[in-house]
Length: 139
Image 1 (cartoon, rainbow, N blue to C red):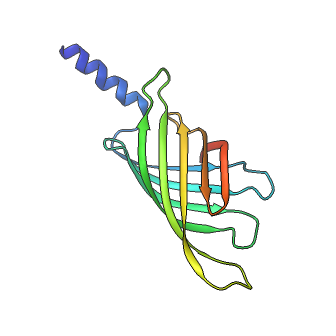
Image 2 (cartoon, rainbow, N blue to C red):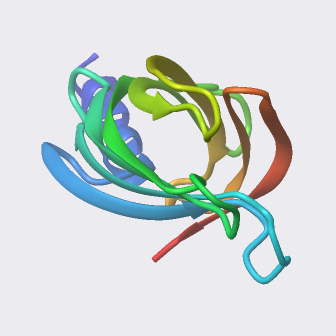
Image 3 (spheres, rainbow, N blue to C red):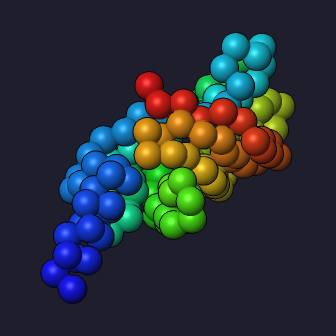
């Protein structure tokens, strides 16, 4: 029984860093003109799976840049080559373009499927923008 505990401990240590760590990733088709890109700077609490940080959406259109806090959770698939499934959500103030007047809170959601090095695929949505199956790259 004691040997099993040692094996389990060493297996979980291989999945990723232990404790609290920072990870930065870019989500989107970088290099595609006009494509929305999300830059994430996340603090990950590995034991609890909680994630929080800052998201920055950049897009080469008027009013296309937004920076705001996000939070979420990491889940492990536990199958074969273990993947991290990351769920994030946040809100930002969106000001409507002229001639309209006003602002409102816009919801942001992201789902990522990454390996232990934080590379993989994912998607995100905000306002009327829905992006699926784009690369996730650690920076």
